[in-house]
Structures are given as structure tokens and as C-alpha cells.
Length: 375
Ligand SMILES: NC(=O)c1ccc[n+]([C@@H]2O[C@H](COP(=O)([O-])OP(=O)(O)OC[C@H]3O[C@@H](n4cnc5c(N)ncnc54)[C@H](O)[C@@H]3O)[C@@H](O)[C@H]2O)c1
Ligand SMILES: [Fe+2]
Image (cartoon, rainbow, N blue to C red; front, side, top):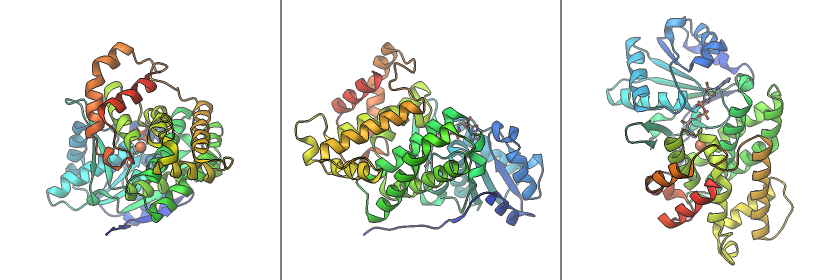
């Protein structure tokens, strides 16, 4: 038996941030990062709910930590908020998810509004958050239905100020979500429908959003792709590309989307059995990747060739949006990787995303993927 929960309200389109006006008169906490304060977006949000600067907590840093969650809880409690609005990328939204979990445990009911300002994580619609335990050097994915935002606002105009590198990384994160969900153990007709549309939109618009950051159509389509890919993986699960990105992100401070972009093609080759004679002909995942290749408009071909076309398409796009191909190009030193290798492999095997991968890897197979990623 499967269960599909879709319990959040969605507002979308240019100017949809105005939906915040419904909370005017409530005690509202706005959780964001310093850049959102600089762009003026956080203060206009505060204005819409009838608050001033005192309602804004702007100390969110990329890749939320347990300490950041604790500090944000203190702020939300200090103003006795009834509504908490996360404005920012996955880092702001993920922090508030953890806050909702912690304070919910203390019987504090918070209405949670998520307003993404990147087109990437899909966190505004998922039951999933990733928090870093700095002392243990690990990123911990947590899945819990209580942290799905009660309301999401997809106002693509907020993403027009996203710098090129962040557009590239977050866009590659969208593609990774859609592809991992498409081949995941939990994939079904409903998650496939979300993933397929997300793939069409993301492959069709990421380069344009990267080159012309002020393009309404490209930004809107990427924001929709991000949301749809979030819905897809919320139902189907992710896979070892995310497990590897979590481990590399924690070990070498590589942004989440960039780590995914570097690992993705190697994970596809492994899942599809491209390195094994006749592997791609037998693999269930290979058939799905081949279908994905057709969906994004690559020429029709047999299974193995279609998967190879897909890999090449991702490599081309990654190049065009300026994402490096290997950890070496990123400046990771081989000795550092060697030293951390056993820990990284262990963390990939234990990561919450690994069970959904279509093929269960052993330590040796993860090690081989890491060697390729290193370059
Ligand atoms: N919960 C989920 O479902 C999920 C899925 C994937 C990733 N994640 C997590 O999300 C985090 C990454 O999120 P992200 O990729 O959105 O990046 P982010 O939130 O860390 O933001 C990256 C940078 O972009 C800046 N930025 C964001 N919006 C901007 C805008 N409109 N204009 C100018 N600058 C802007 C931020 O200030 C920051 O410096 C990681 O911690 C990752 O583990 C969560
Ligand atoms: Fe992701």
C-alpha cells in the first residue's frame, strides 16, 4: 500500500509573495540570510505582514548546522511567533524545517510558510531537511511529514538576483532530484509524471536562466521544475548521488548542487551498468534513464546508447554552466581524499538516501565512483 500526502497550499507566479498579506496582524518570524536582507526582499516581506526589521532573523548560512537550528529556535521563541516564514534557498527553508520539528516537540504549533529564492532544492514541498553535525563531520538527512511547509509561495521574480554560479549549482540539483526520483526504488506513475515534467523544464531552461538571469520564462520554468522535482523525490526517494553529495559537502565544503553535478554522470553509469558488459541491457534503471533521454528530446536509440546520450547531455550542460568535472578541478587534494576516503564511503553507505537507489552498492563500488569523481 502506498500513501500520497499533498497537504500544503501553493501560491505561484510573479508577485505571489503578496499572499503573505494574509498574515498581517499575526506574530510573524521571518528567517532568512544576509543577502535577502541586502536585496530588500526580507524587508518587503516584513512590510506585507505589518512588521519591521525586528521580525527578521537574517543569520542563516549555507548548509545549516545543529547550532544554527538552535539559534533560530531561540529567535522564534523570543518573539513568540505563531507564523514562521522562511525566505531563501534550501539553507533557510531546511533550517526552519528543523525548527518546526524541535519546537513542535515542545507543543508549539507554528504555521510554516516557505518562499524559495533559488530554483533548486524543492525544499518548499518536501518532508525532508538536511542538517550538518559539524562535530561529527556529517550531513544528516531527516524525513518527517510534520516538517512539510503549510504553505509555499513560488514567486520566480525573487530568483532573478541569484548569481550565475548559484543558478548553475541549484539547477543541477533540480536535474539530480528528477533523475534520482525517476529511477528510485519508490518511483511510481505519479512521481514519474512529476519527474518527467521537471526534466523537460530543467533541461530546456537551465542554460537560458544561467545566461539571461532576468529572463521571466527561464526563471519561472526553473522554479516550476524545482517544485515538481521536489514532489517527485518526496514520493519516490533519492539515491546515492545525494548520499555522495552529502558526504563530499560535509568533508570538503562543496556546495550541494555542485557536488551532485560532479557525481551525477558516474552514478548514472553505475546504476545503469554501463561499465559492465551487457549491464545496461539487463538493468531496470537503464531503461528508465533511456526513457529520460527520449523525454528531453535526445535521438531515439537502443538502451545503452540512450543512456550514453543522456550522460553526454549532462556533461555538456554542466560544462556550459561552468561547473567543474572533477574534485581535482575544484582543488581537492588527492591526499586529503585518501585520508577521508573510508569515512566518506561509510557515510554514503549509511546515508538516508542510499536505500532508495535502484542498485545497492558495496564499499568497493562506492570507492570506484569516488576515484572517477576525483578525476
Ligand atoms: N530539503 C530538501 O529537500 C533539500 C534538497 C536538496 C538540498 N537541500 C539542502 O539545501 C541547501 C542548499 O540550498 P540552495 O542550493 O538553495 O542554496 P543556499 O540556500 O545555501 O543559497 C546559496 C547562496 O545563494 C544565495 N541566494 C539565495 N537566493 C538568492 C537570491 N534570490 N539572490 C541572490 N542570492 C541568493 C544565498 O544567500 C547563498 O549565499 C543545502 O544545505 C542542501 O543540503 C535540501
Ligand atoms: Fe538536492
